[in-house]
Length: 299
Image (cartoon, rainbow, N blue to C red; front, side, top):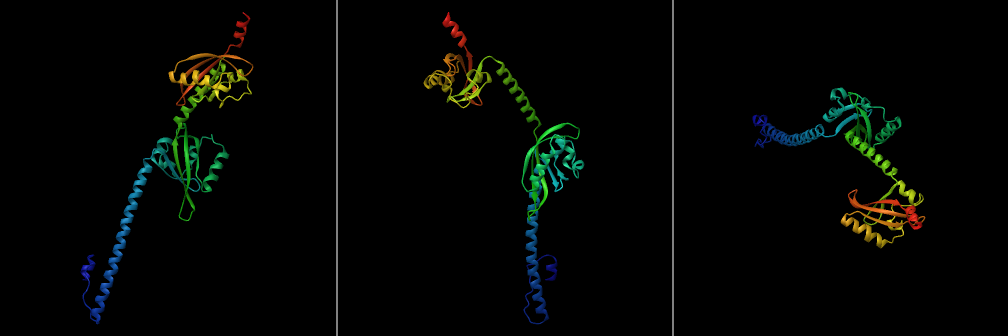
């Protein structure tokens, strides 16, 4: 029996029930075997749970390492404890160069001390912070990144680490700047034209008004958000039939004359159907022909 137990076979017991020393010894052997069986079962469960946890940790580690976003873990003082491969790809710093350092190695002095103070006050209080940085790579090049920084707490709720997930948004920033430049150019171009311009949707709501048109109609006039038929003496039915429905349905360009509400001005209005922000709309070009009409009447 003892040899079987020593070999790990716990299914054998000693079938002796006498009250002498042999019986007592056999009883102890049986108790020991039962205890070993229980311990073995618990140990087996622990090993199984450990293996499952290890597998989950392996998958999580693999996911973090292969993440398309940079991942940084620091201690409560901000010293870097871990960076993934994407961090190295973006910044040029290897994990060996980054670990133990402070994220200040990426600082480009484009963020004010007040902004950094607000960041630290947020995460120390246990909240998540989100924002953008213009940082500097190892080679000195600057880059934009969007960062989400969260505190990592233990079971007692104490903050032990900070987790930062960062996305390189340099290309997006460049695209936004290009669009902004184009928009500024278009605004300048439209503003320099002697014509007034607005954009109207299918319901007759005015979506955009140029500065020139505001001047023509009167600067104190509220135009954006108004109905187009409230700006002119034409009634709603005429606007819907002539401009909105017909123009947007056919896509053809139409030119009409309309007398303005303000000052009795007369405008020659050209309607051009187009798509504005994914929806059908009309571009209206206003030419003030009040003077020409007066000359015509005099002639």
